[in-house]
Amino acid sequence: MYAFGICIDRHYLTPGLATITSLADSLSPRARKAAALRFLTFDLGAPQVQLLAHLSKRVGFGSFALARRSPLRSARMADTSYITVTTYLRFEFTPNFVRRPYLIYVDADVLVCDDLTTPLHALRPGEVGAVRDEFNPAVGRCPALPGAVDRWPRLRDRPYFNAGLLWAHTADLPRIRHGVEQTLARHRRHILHNDQDALNLWLLHTGRVRAADAAYNRFEVVRYLERGDWVRRVITRPLRPDPAARLIHFVGPEKPWQADCPDTDDVREYRTLLKRTLRHVRALGAAHPEPAGLR
Image 1 (cartoon, one colour):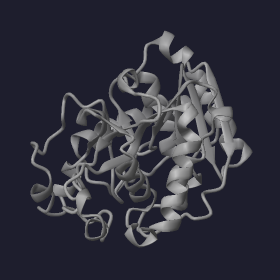
Image 2: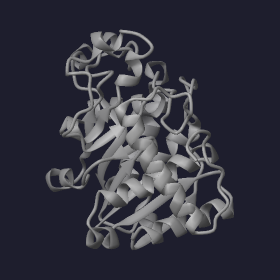
Image 3: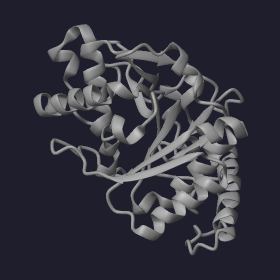
């Protein structure tokens, strides 16, 4: 009935493997067998693709496919501090490739804690399901979409959504891609957060968004408290791990598979998952470099 879509390049192979294990943990064996995994890349080699496929089968997914795609020609990388053009591949999933009625797009820098499929039940044809961004919650009140409220005052205070977890009817994927492509071509001066800004501007103008509960895309914020206090001015919820979170998103340049990432509770949980993932890799007989400090 549904497929999980993930985009990775060679720099994100390790977290991509962990995402497979994390998604498997979130589903019953029966649901796992019925679900599909769909990967897009532009630079993975055959051994890396084979490793992804073998791990997917080992943890119980019934269908795996990977395709090579190029990002939109109109792709604009305004923020390149830790993000690559691979981020634009999320709009390159097609119905012929997905081959399921629904696509759940998932970023690779996440820890899945529970079933992510429930929002599909409320999703109407033509809508994109998304979660409000914790760091950029409202247009005109955050750095996202610079200048947009000056041009379109009606957009002020409208919700701004994070693109790290999205739900869509597969039949709508070409329409979403076209909308983002047109937005990039016509409104480039309002793009700061790359494809996420383009998606949000299209959603704001079309109204084709279905908000999902915040628990489906919780940011791991304790890492930021190790570097400064600014996050307290942005997020009003308690700054501690959320026991109700269905997905923990490690946004920002510091990632839990990096040895110098602050050692928070969520980071430790991710590293436990990653160690288990690497044991699967070794059991498959695959040669894969392990992140420093996680052997």
